[in-house]
Image 1 (cartoon, rainbow, N blue to C red):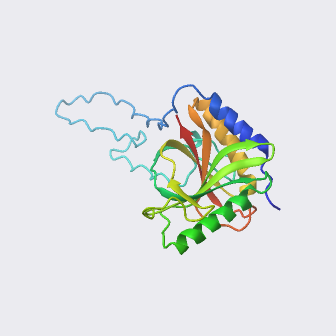
Image 2 (cartoon, rainbow, N blue to C red):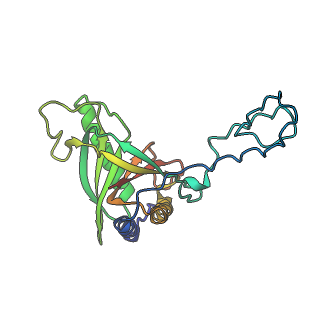
Image 3 (cartoon, rainbow, N blue to C red):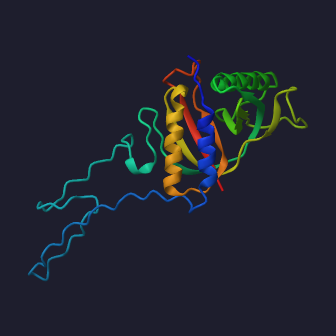
Length: 241
């Protein structure tokens, strides 16, 4: 089944982003490890104090056991919103602008994914014809939404732009990818389920009072043929003011 992307999702995200005029995003600072309990002063002045290890728990043994190595794959509840199997984690990043080949289109609400992937395929074919090489995964910039669907700009970043050209065809133009500070979130799962990730992002931005632009970007880290494929990996960027 082709994913039905509701207009309500876009309106909710856009409204939440415009409303966030509060403070800048709070930094995620892990809680400091508890200090070792103070030991009674040694009666012998010659005894040298041993500095407690901040990562070690208080222990009666003279040599504390080494702290366990944290698992980088373990979820961090305070790092950002979590939308179940889809997953998302917020972090602030700097987007670097690159030359890009792009296509601007509009998709019905129930054909967003197929429309974007079709546009990306057309861009890839055109840049291959011109001997150009992609420099990063393709993206889609969502520009606006109305009753009939979404307006988007599909882009493939390039290693370099051809000299003296502003377009590769009547529909494939040349320009620059977005630049600036953004907050990155992750969606891992079917595109059909991406609404849950956007709901989590909206709640997170609202809670943190993030001052964001009314624009979001999807970066497609792998290719899947169907919006139902659970192996899809998408990074979502919310541009900050």
